[in-house]
Amino acid sequence: MCRGCARPIGRGELRFGEQLPNPYGQGEMTLWFHPACAAFKRPEPLLQVLGETPGKVPEREALERAARSSLAQRRIPRIDGAERSPSGQASCRSCHETITRGSWRIRLVFFEGARFSPGGYVHLACRKAYFEGSEVLEQILHFSPDLRGEERRELERAYVGDA
Ligand SMILES: [Zn+2]
Ligand SMILES: [Zn+2]
Image (cartoon, rainbow, N blue to C red; front, side, top):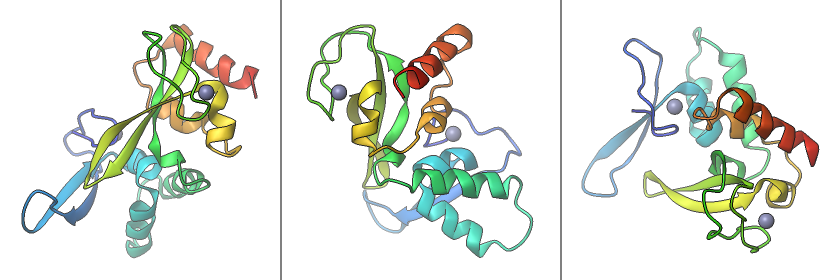
């Protein structure tokens, strides 16, 4: 399983392993990612590994570009996709107002102690305040694989519409 998107990493597929001290015991543990998921959610270690790997790496330029786009603002690696709010209970981490049922929200996760933990939500429309004007559509779409077809286009329209 990829730690970034919680989907399987296919057999024989290139994967990125990040070694970290094991917070639950001794020694080190390795977190595995799809390279693109690591680029968005763990940009610094991915860039470091790319820098230490001189040979051919598939999609190297795309990975470096993705990682740099996530490094543009310190909160961007928290992005875990977007969804229409299934209830009206959560509040926005940026404006602190309620996120009404059915409106678009960005899911956030925090990386701490070698794991990602749920970190709440921000209104799609609050992204400019929260991410200080950085473009984050790529990250949002990458971590929203369940949104397909018309829903995906609606999200893109909502993003562009309040740009
Ligand atoms: Zn992944
Ligand atoms: Zn908000």
